[in-house]
Amino acid sequence: MNEFSNWEGKMKRTKHFFGFLLAFLAIAFFTSMVGACPDCAAEGKIGAIVVDMQGDFTKMKDGSLAVAGTDEAFVKKVEDATKLLASHGFVIFGTQDWHPAEHVSFYINHEGKKPFELIEVNGKPQVLWPPHCVQGTENARILVDNNLFMAVVKKGKDPRYDSYSGFQDDGGAKTEMDKILKRNGIQKVVVYGIATDYCVKATAIDAKNAGFKVIVVEDLCKGVAPDTSKKAYKEMADAGVKVIKTLDLKEIRDF
Image (cartoon, rainbow, N blue to C red):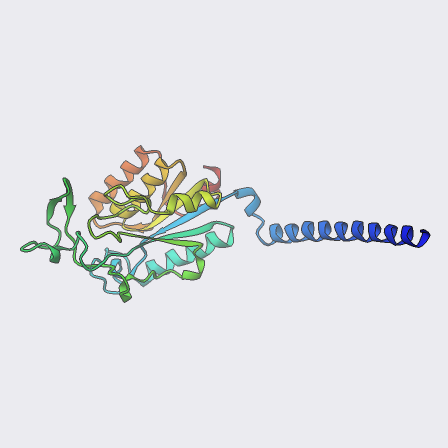
């Protein structure tokens, strides 16, 4: 009986020791993680949405819809900014145009039509574009280091509808962006990329409408045209999106 009691006592002491050890290790791990990223705890969950940084939208890759100013230097600037955000604990997401060859926005799929003509499709205005970001093609690839992304949302997959926003297409079908952000505890997003007056604007406004705080960084965006880009920034601001000139971590945190 005494032997059993001694054995039972040893087991209890061993159990308490291992419980203490596990608690100590958990605290040490958390402390080391905060030390590795001192800003993470202060910033909370902030995401970045890198919009359509794909070959077909850049001069760097001679893209079919290359936007002015999207040379190698701009692509590097966007990648460097994304790395900086990631190093400060921001969670990085991306959008990627991913069209089937028969997509409604391609002028070649409308007999007698030319690039950039405006027609009506499904009761809505539709700009006709040169074929771009066709699924599986080289110039549909994202040029920013793919290892930075927590997730990339492909858009424009339905051949019947265009899709500028990373949250939904023109037919109203939702992407997984909203669910992914909320599942990761994101409450605030920084949005930048190509093109200011189309996909950046649509993604930023839809993010705001979905309940997120939204910041757009002008210096990390390029637009199709100066006048429509200027109008886009006003529309975003009117919708409650904060537009800042350059990447400023303090300004982003304080918003």
